[in-house]
Length: 405
Figure 1 (cartoon, rainbow, N blue to C red):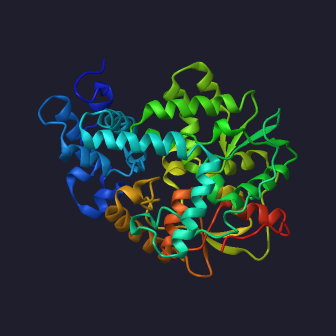
Figure 2: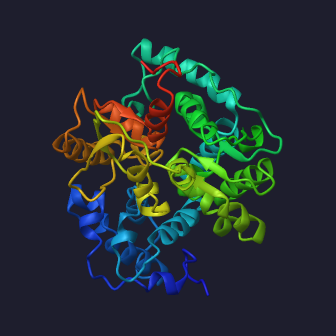
């Protein structure tokens, strides 16, 4: 039974035994050293608010907002604490509090999550506006690691995939991926076609998965978007996703929507590397193996827990270099880089050092499968390539798709 100002599940809240094993895996604790910036500290703060020992005011709200939601703590927790559930429940309450600041936040969220991200025409138009802003050097500093360096090639609409129908597999195209990473979609389509399947993309109802809205506590919007996504990809065909964050969101639709149809839908969702490994009879193999550094997006490693598929898919064709930071977050976190620029920058600097120590350089690319990670690491000076692009280049090196740059 849920009770208290935050409406948290007592069983989830009391599962934490304050052992501290999560601390080394929390990026905000690592860069600040503050207890309130750790999962253990945030749960203690939730408990204090829930029991009436502390008010639901700015210090608590800030502590919740400063969490990047990487969920590295969940993989390290011996008690199985569902920290992500607690954080999303707390943020949902915070998002619907009273006051002018909360009202303005809800209004901005409604515009961004309902009108901007799901609408590809509007998002594409805005992308050209952002390109001009970058060329004129008027892009606000806090958005520089959240928005990639845009070029005409990057904004070209190059994906040639049928919309709707009765395919063997669906390719979920989403919002940001479709606007700024079309080359990844093209590579994903090539990889899928190489297995002999008929592919289709969903119609405009599936313009956004709702992940950013859910992370911000706007579950009403997230549920609305999720219902549209489910309706846009009917049938039983697998749904292939090449964004780690989107894949994690779609796989969680059963919990978000709470019905059997959503559970069945979620069971059809696969990360592109996960699906290709299951379909490919023999791994890629080359004699001269190019080195790449693996960067696991948090939502692939800590949520979907399918990050080993990338290694299985590419290990025969590339020399895979690993970081020594146990897959620590890169600091992107969806909109985190824009909302918490100082903390995000500190976390990204730690990740950049780990990548360089592993061998990443101007000649050795970083392999990552999430748009937020890609943009943050590009802003830090790295060349970032998606696993699907590496795979597609191996099976069809003469694809001739336009490269970003």
